[in-house]
Image 1 (cartoon, rainbow, N blue to C red):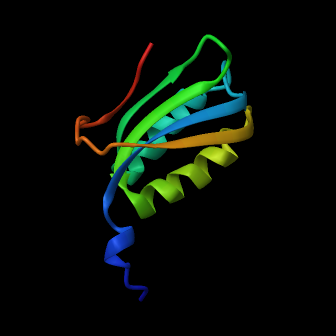
Image 2: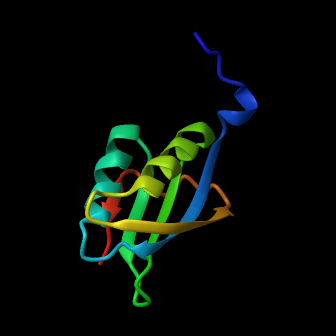
Length: 100
């Protein structure tokens, strides 16, 4: 059994801009399902430029795994790139939601 390094197990917040064919393909609900399975909190929403924005808080290791899943995306979409920016962890989300 792998022991987690406690320094990697700290809570963090990130903004993820998902680029590619990610609107109109169920990407937000794909992200919602994955986030709920992983137990992370935040939101996902479509942006006017065609990207999808995700702001999420959770343990660093779990968020790293979440990013890998997002890179694969739903079967009808195509993810070109993820642009990730660390944010201050504020513990301000109690669940993960789709915003409009």
